[in-house]
Amino acid sequence: MNKLLSQYNDEKLVELYTQGNESALEELINRYQQKVFAYILMVVHDKDLAEDLFQDTFIKVINTLKLGLYREEGKFNQWLMRITRNLVIDHFRRCQKMSYVDNHETGDIFDSFSEPSMSIEQTMIMQQIYDSLHELISFLPEEQKEVLDLRIYKELSFKEIAEKTNVSINTALGRMRYAIINLRKMAKERNTILNY
Image 1 (cartoon, rainbow, N blue to C red):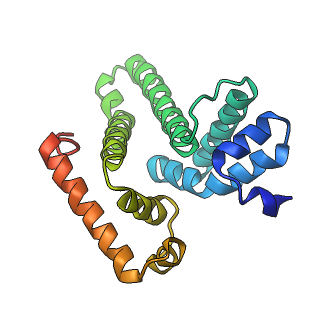
Image 2: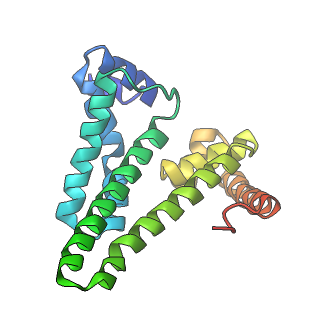
């Protein structure tokens, strides 16, 4: 059954899970757990905390799906990463408030403007860049979008991309190169990303 589920796209798995197929959720978690955990760990630099936030992320996903509140057809991956980022930001906001209360009581108010607030800012900037980049990618020709998706989000090698898209490795590399050139050009024209 799991082998069959692995052939389905995210939206089909969401649909199956909401119809009561628990294995469909397991497949979705397996598909994205490495990416989600790596992102959280990169931001919080603490394995135990990363594991807690990782669990919180999938609890929120499960609750949202069970309540029938998921409405983003074709964008499960982005939706999942947005939940992840928001939970990380919420964690740092809580830390900042706790830090402020503790330091205020001891009279050292300036310590509250240390690491946590910087992490929130960096995380929010990363989200702005991610959102802007995603918008720019939508304007690329289909073959360039495809190679970017396979290389960056699905982490395939150029050899695998060439096989999957029935082109030569040189063509796959060329499409990636043109995609990056086009993204830079659009970013410059729109003053996007470079402004953050």
